[in-house]
Length: 380
Ligand SMILES: NC(=O)C1=CN([C@@H]2O[C@H](COP(=O)(O)OP(=O)(O)OC[C@H]3O[C@@H](n4cnc5c(N)ncnc54)[C@H](OP(=O)(O)O)[C@@H]3O)[C@@H](O)[C@H]2O)C=CC1
Ligand SMILES: CC(=O)[C@@H](O)[C@H](O)COP(=O)(O)O
Ligand SMILES: [Mn+2]
Image 1 (spheres, helix red, strand yellow):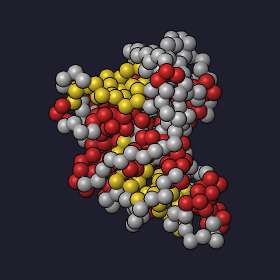
Image 2 (cartoon, rainbow, N blue to C red):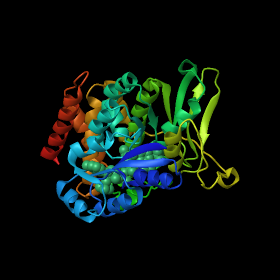
Image 3 (cartoon, rainbow, N blue to C red):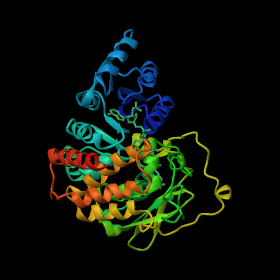
Image 4 (cartoon, rainbow, N blue to C red):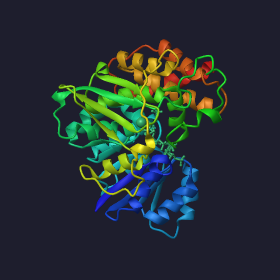
């Protein structure tokens, strides 16, 4: 039996993880955490029988306790609830499918408790990679990538020593507005930005793909996961999302991972690594794909990518400002309070206003997050 817990079980990655659990009898769910979707969480509790379940708000937790009073599951709430979920005794692997840098503290606590991490929650690594990666090494826990590109890189790296790696080719779909001019991006509606060409995902990451902030976050995520420098990563726009990323080796050979866009494959790979199992998914039909194309990214049009590189180069607390400003700006865009191009504008202004902390500890990261939110609230 493999014992797992899921942070963010009601979301896109969380529900696909549970789909994998349904099809693999040797996976057992020990604990689940959700934000507000009490109805779906109740269903999941009844189907997967976790011993602990968490929701964010204590009021929702009280409601959930009433709903599942016939079961012996402990219902918890808040940050301490998330920590109870990830430190559940029997759990071996925690799937971090929560959205945003709220995942930092539970991820750190999971590592301290010796749990392996199947990491989807890229915001945590972008903001606290300098704390998390050494901690994982010291605790001898595995950080297994779930993000499709990073899983592809991880799969392409199997059997090779890090010294043999020359570059990483990180693919990007280019999002729904690939090829548009900056002028054309001015009046984009939320509904249009939520239409990703290839992937069905949660709302925040879908907007991040449209601004290409997602690719910027993924560049930083790759630096931490694979211990490579920024100039060893090339972003390649590949609109078909069939090549999920590749590694170029010192002899010029390039090894890539290909597949139809289906997040269940990287999730399952992380859960059963190094084994592979039948996923029951539609096989890749290269004749159906027909053509695969490649383009250079346009950081001049998609300023979010340019700002991500600036944040990565600055390091210290600046990636936290980049990420926190983006989280707040995307929430405002989804609420129709700001326009599409105000997302990078807010990130840029927040970064300009920030005084960098070189090697922030956890408290300084969380303080920087709060200061960034306060800065944005006072102006937008
Ligand atoms: N979706 C995808 O295909 C991919 C996603 N990722 C990354 O995975 C992460 C999750 O993305 P995705 O699944 O799309 O996001 P969703 O928005 O679909 O799901 C987010 C999950 O987080 C939960 N959540 C939000 N706030 C809290 C909170 N305060 N406490 C507890 N749970 C909370 C939500 O609960 P509720 O809904 O109940 O409020 C939900 O279960 C992100 O970091 C994203 O970048 C990476 C690669 C691909
Ligand atoms: C499925 C996944 O991993 C997403 O992060 C996806 O990569 C988004 O696509 P783009 O950011 O390349 O548009
Ligand atoms: Mn990705």
